[in-house]
Each structure stands twice: as C-alpha cells, then as structure tokens.
Figure 1: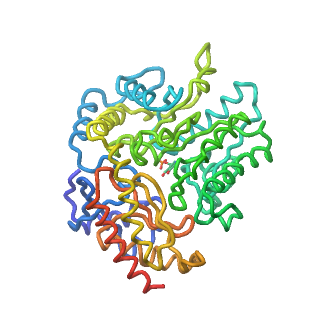
Figure 2: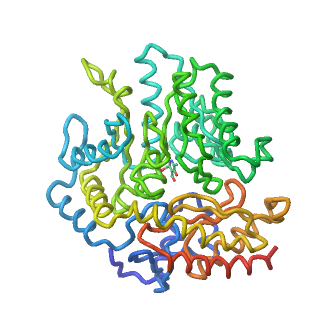
Length: 461
Ligand SMILES: Cc1ncc(COP(=O)(O)O)c(C=O)c1O
C-alpha cells in the first residue's frame, strides 16, 4: 500500500488505535512508533525516508530479502486465480505442491504436512497431534511436554505451556497444564548450572540427560513429547553442543517420547539448510516451521509429521479434529513455492553455510570490548551476550538492564541505522538474523555499527 497520509497523521492514528505486540503502549505517547514504509534487499526505510540495515530480517522472516517483485507477482497471480479455498475436505494445487516439496526436503519419513498460518499454530498443532496420537496408540496418559528454560514457542495456550519464559505466562495462568522445563544449552553459563563447563561434549551429555531425568521423574507413561529448537533463540542463540541431539533422540526412543524440532526460526536457510535438523544430523518425529517459508511475503505455518505418527490417522473413519480457516492459504502456499525456487536458483542455503564462519569471525572481533561476554550462534543467526564483568561473567541487575537495553541500546542501534534486537528475556543479548543474501561487506558494516554503539554504551553504565 502506498499511503496518502503523512507521518504525523499516521503517528496520531497509531497512538489512538493501534495495539502493538509485546510492546509498552506508553512508548507511543512519549516518542511515537517507528513506521516502516518500504524494504529492498537488506534495507528498510522509515516514514521520514531514513534507511536502515535490516539485521533481523523483519523478525527472523524475510530470508530472501525485501522487495522481491517476483514473490509479489506470484501472490497477485494466485489471488486472481483462486484467492481462497480451505483445506477442509477440499484441496488446491498450491497447498498440494507445497506439501510435496516440504515432504521431499524433510528428513527421514517426515512425509505428511499439516498447514497453519504461523509458528504458534504449528506448535499448537504438534502438541495436539502428540496427545491425540498417544491416545490412539492406547497410551492415553501420555500428555505432558518437556521444553527448555527461557525457550519461546508461541502464544496460544498450549504453545504457552511449552514456552519457558515465566514473565510471559504468569498473567495468563492457568495455561494448559503439563509443561515441564529442563536446562537449555547455554554453554557460556554452564558453570552456573552446575554442569561441565570446560568440555562442550560433556556439557551436551549433561544437558540431554536432564531431559531423561525429567521423563523419569514425571513417568515416561505421562510424557508425550519434547519440544526443542535446533538453535534456541530466546536467551540469545544457544547452539546444541556436539552429540546433544543424537543423545536426545536416543532418550526419546528409549522412553517412547516424540521429539519435535521447533524450526519456526531455524528452517528455510537460517542455519544453511531447508530444515535445520538435516544439518545437525537428527531426525525428529515432527518439525514445526513458519516465518521464512514465504520470506514473509504472505503468512503460513506447517507441522511436518512422520509416517509413524500419521499412520493411525490414515484409515477408516479417523480424522484429526483440528484446523484453521486460513491454514495453507493458496496465496501463501504459492508464494512459499516461489520463495523456495529462489532459494534453489540463488543457492541461498549454500551461501549461508559458506559465509557463516566469516560472519562469526567479524562479530567475534567485538569480544575486545569490555561489554561483550560471548558471541554464539550458527548460520546467519547470532547472539552477542552483554556482561557487566567479563572476568566473572557477572550480568546486569534489572535496573541496569533496563537502562542499557531499553534506555540506550535499542534506540541507539536504530539511530545508528541498524535494526536488530536487544533482548533480555534471558541475560541481555543483541540478536542478529539478517536476510540470507548479505555477505562479507555487510558483515563488516554490522560489526562497525555495533562497535560504535557498544563503545558508547559503556558510558551509560
Ligand atoms: C521457536 C518459535 N516457535 C514458535 C514461535 C511462534 O511463532 P508465531 O509468532 O508465528 O506464532 C516463534 C516465534 O518467534 C518461535 O521463535
């Protein structure tokens, strides 16, 4: 849409009527809201005409970059031909072909695709499917779910039970019951968890064994599934230690517990593969995905399911009583197929695999700053943890964190022309997940902006 309103009019309308997501509404009163009007490649522009580097691909979404006419035209073509039809008893070519493509790319026997409209719905679908599956298998008490501390898995009540961030749940209690938390794979803070801190493999065994401990504690006959991100986003990009997922897979198999790979962020090239589990060498029972599937040109989510889980639903009068009006929307499905064609033609997955070490090396230069404690991540997905004292790894108290992140860093980074995320759902981190089209010159540009802003941040502490 090209609006005819000027910025002042839009600000006034937003202040009066727009309810922002996960945002303090009072900020609109004080300073208004940044209004983004245009995107092209890895750049975005605000209503004042100022250009920014999109260091977060919108919200881990715009993997192929902004301004792709081809995707916009695909959307328009599909909407002209068939704007909408549901997947309830009927189907349409775009959803069928996309399901085929996703099943082709998913590892092992993950061959069945259930569409939704976003990540939270994909997670909710996986949870309901796991519970229903165990009932059909004659194990009706298997309903609990295990996930990791500080992990974010979405906002529906079921997904919220899996989300491990108390501050996002307490006001909605009681959420769906049966969610249990185990430690995440934050190797930087291993010692504080009482875990092996000088051997990543030993740390990985320790972290995986906490899952088995929880299954045994709750009783394997009550646990339906474990939900894990390949690289955990919330808390600041925790990659899995070597051997972690192989051991988790063994544990899940031993106790008849389903392994769900929540790839809402990590799929579609973010880690250099269509599905991150492929690159990390494990085969889950389900994959949940969304965001990058269309690079954000239209919303869609999917839960990709193994033949084993699908089997009891496949015959007789069985159905899975679950669905969404807009799940597998024709426009979104057509755009997803075109987006994946762009991935193939431009070799975006391979590009990420080749360039990721260069991106990491550029960011690791920041470790010479007193504020930067750790740089971690994989692919085009990195977190930079900020600390008060590098030697002791002491973190900031709530007031300091507020002053540093909200008071200074978020506005200063934006002012300096870099849109990224300063987050304190765990320890304070800056998160980067740019479009997959960038390379070395852009990595350097990001490093230089961060260096300048983080150097100045020292002064506000
Ligand atoms: C790992 C993970 N799962 C689920 C979700 C929820 O996705 P959505 O916001 O599309 O509902 C997110 C969102 O960021 C996510 O990162």
